[in-house]
Length: 200
Image (cartoon, rainbow, N blue to C red; front, top):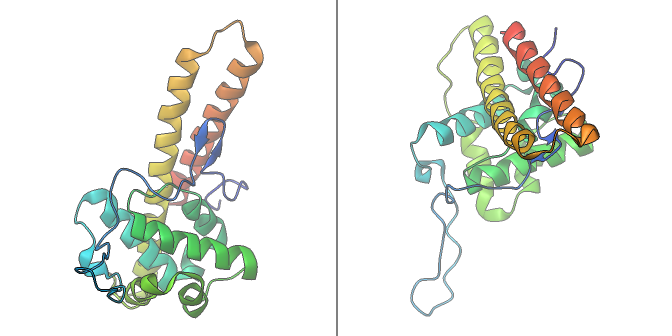
């Protein structure tokens, strides 16, 4: 079956687990600032400025795969990926540009994403759209694209599960409606996770 189990955009829409806050603990890469007292031009962001931690690399690789091979990723998986929380603020802007274009056009084109993001971030989109991917054959590339984007979604599902389990522990079992709602959300997360694994 296709990832998402018929629930496109499922990641990021659980009770008490808001997946679209546009950022996280990690700061933006290469944040430009004023030089002295002069009004210096804003320096464009670059993927060379991105941190090398595993979480940022996953976000970068997933966006790179989505921008270069949207058909291989599929709209359902792309929507789930863009509903995921990003820790890097620069990549979160690119994510939001992708989400906006997909929501408006029902398809993904790099030039539309470039036009959608603020000017200092356009270069990041263009760089991600041409950066080399590790696979060479079509079959290997498709498997890589779906795998790396699914990993991003799976990370989001794990985050939501942790938040919901914490909320469940704080919920009075006598509040049956809330308790049942959280348990249903946990079941949905597990179904989404299994569908991603099955698709691999």
